[in-house]
Length: 144
Image 1: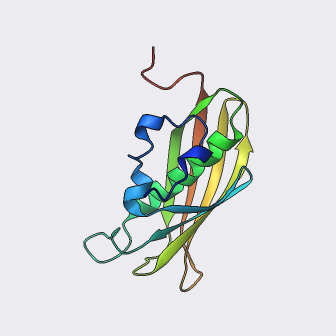
Image 2: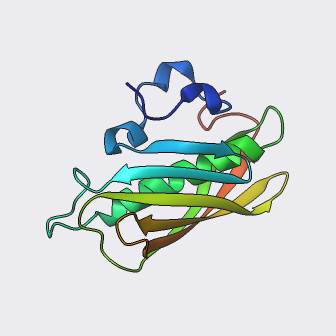
């Protein structure tokens, strides 16, 4: 079962709805508004070799929320893809859940930028700050 509701993502191709990376990491989007998205992700199962939450898992969480935010804010008929992702890992998470809150910094006709703040649920402390810029396209890359 998907933890991401594919019916809420504009432009999502039905043939890939059951293949989302976010599902493999256990990401669950709990708030779906163009001005604010919230998601959780378990630390367990997303670790690096030292028993800490993998930085790449933070990046996937951030890009998932930012991309959905960009899609929700995109002009009608446009598809969005990530252009640049920056993640600063402030502290380690070792267990429980992390929660990400995504808010737009800029929403334009061709680009949009989002800040994604990830915090550890059991302490409330910030573990990662990410910024994602997406570009709006007329068609998916590789389409003719």
